[in-house]
Image 1 (cartoon, rainbow, N blue to C red):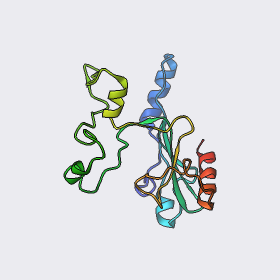
Image 2 (cartoon, helix red, strand yellow):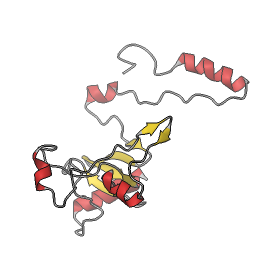
Image 3 (tube, helix red, strand yellow):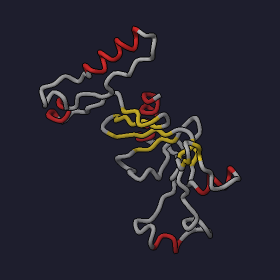
Length: 173
């Protein structure tokens, strides 16, 4: 919200540093990463009409008033839990060790080296509660399904919502 504070969305110190770096053949810093949201807040319009990249494996986009999320690749911590977790949900687990064994912390490091708690990759994946959306990805309608339980790409019916989802996916790629 730089406009609200009467300043520009530009880092002048970084611009000066970039000139210094370029003169020495060094890599430059990236520009300010953001979109001024004041107009969107005051007008009630979408602040990022082209979508929002959340990570290298996920993005959001609003299509015809519905918010969609596209996720690709392996996602850790993908287990759906009851609202009482970690209390009561572990007593109704579908299999032994389902909730009592994990999740393992994904980014645990010691001296900048990953620490693996399990040697077998399949066991490590299970313990991190991984799900694999593959290269094609999983597509979720966050307005109708905020818990991301229903992958629209896996659904077999071709409803109007599925067609909107397909358009959203095409726009996100």
